[in-house]
Length: 637
Image (cartoon, rainbow, N blue to C red):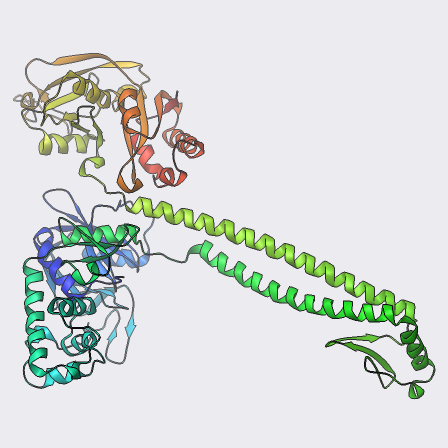
């Protein structure tokens, strides 16, 4: 239903998200010529900004960014100009699907210009409007955009943003063969918005502009202006879903015209959330090797079918000729012998023709030439051999068609399975705490732990409050764990959080079976060392009395929790906790199997089990499992 953002969509989105983006620093750039993905560092958690040239721009909470080796050259080019730059402003070219981000880095100033109309590109231009980087070259009649050229905007279309007056705008509206096209052509109103406006004012969208009076058209224009202004100032965002409860479009207003046609409108907390949800369920597809292979197989099948069809027709004709010869063997033999002795004195009939010493049997469009050098019996045997060869060729062709159809079906099913995996993966909404070690206790409290000294430092500075619980294993080197006690809890939550502290400590790599874990209030933790002393990064001073949990086992359950829309995520903790949250799980202890090998074994066991859909397991990337394994391990359950 919806393929690209309209300029009204973009206006609402920019108004909604400008404050989130301005002041942020572009930390890194990912993607390719299809998607450009910016990680933006702010005072809080980073933002992931997705720019789809020719389609949309939105902030996503469902994309996991990872460097996968050397990025493509196009991304290296964008990184060169954008990385570590500060976003100064976020703008939209009025009433155009053009998104502009003004950035600065030191004394350098650039603009990132994203065109969201069809065949649009993303360009980086300097202060002199010279193109420094872009996702694709444009050579059109009205402009040329390439590296080193002066950037030119696409031609603007005058419209409702220009406050139309006089007879000129009416001429534009009259060019439409119905009122929707009239508003699109004459006023540059997006088609979906034009339909909605006409529905709300009670005008048939299919009526010709010439059938309406000037006063009616002027009233429609004024209603359109009011509707657009109100949508930008007070959006009512959501997604449209059909009978399958599948998002089919995102709108910054309630689309009453679609609701009247039986669609459901599900409101979202923001317009960005509606766009993110839509694209999570509509990932952009690329052909890929398997799709190309299906096309190749289908072409081979079509060619074989034509060959089999042609051979079957020939076979049918030869069989009819064979039947004729069987019924008229003596007569045919006499004609053949006559031709061999004296060609000029022999006569044929309606079936057998004689021309220049050649004997040809023609029956129902099928032709077969008898060899006058051979006896009748040898010609008969030759005809039977030809029929047998055709029968074998047809059988082999049909067998090959069947084999190719099975192969295409297998590839198609695999392709569909992979698409299902990508769909599930795209629905996965990453929570801020998943960048750390984490668990949610059986009483609903969140515990987070640093994965290294930098994260230990970060979470204590950013998240530890005086009333929260700080935990650490009784060993040098380990995760600093914070239990966020923002609701009622018992000692059970502390014990469950202690499993993070024990397993993600140096005790695991040392091969311990258990270790003591201490815990204190956040108010007892300080980064200020005593006079004359120095604290290493990730180290803290603990003041006052410590409380202890003795002999916390170094045994970690790791499993897959299935969230809404079948989106999976890895959860860890003790067995009793994980077994209640996870659809499938395993238990590991310190051992001698390297992390990656242990993760691959767990992954394979999960896939081969019948306890969870294979697509859900495959939607988990192996790196997610590796990240949750403390060190060399042994799988015990």
